[in-house]
Amino acid sequence: MTSEVLAVNVAFYRAFEKKDIEAMSAVWSQGTESLCVHPGRNALRGWKAIRTSWEKIFQNTAYIEINIDIVTTQVNDNIAYIVLIENILQVLGGKRIEAQSMATNVFQHLGGKWYLVHHHGSPIIR
Image 1 (cartoon, helix red, strand yellow):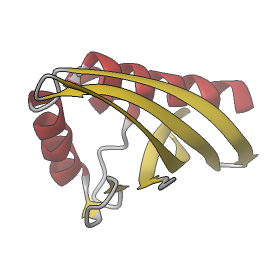
Image 2: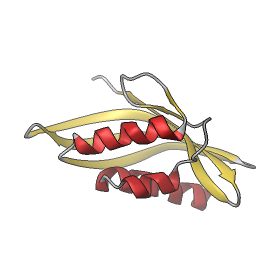
Image 3: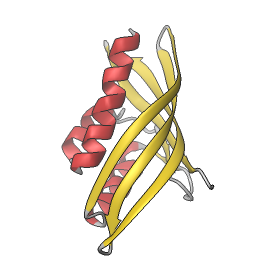
């Protein structure tokens, strides 16, 4: 089970890097209870609002690369979470920006598959 959760987590970050909204849709639960908190932003509830936020991020990001360092992974019955550090390299407005975020990704086992139901990213200030 842990390997399945880790695979969905990797798929989430690959969809993010590729700016692929269909791949992003495949990893997220389409339910109204899903939550997403982008760094420095308010919580978004439900896939519709979350999808719109990803579409805007993808439109406004020329390039992004994310390498992750997993702090911990916990899998219980139908809920799992991964706490990790996102090492982010992006190009915005022609400028190269490097940053780190602490993130928590929560997954739920629904209909025989693991889905992301909560993502919360918080900037690490150094």
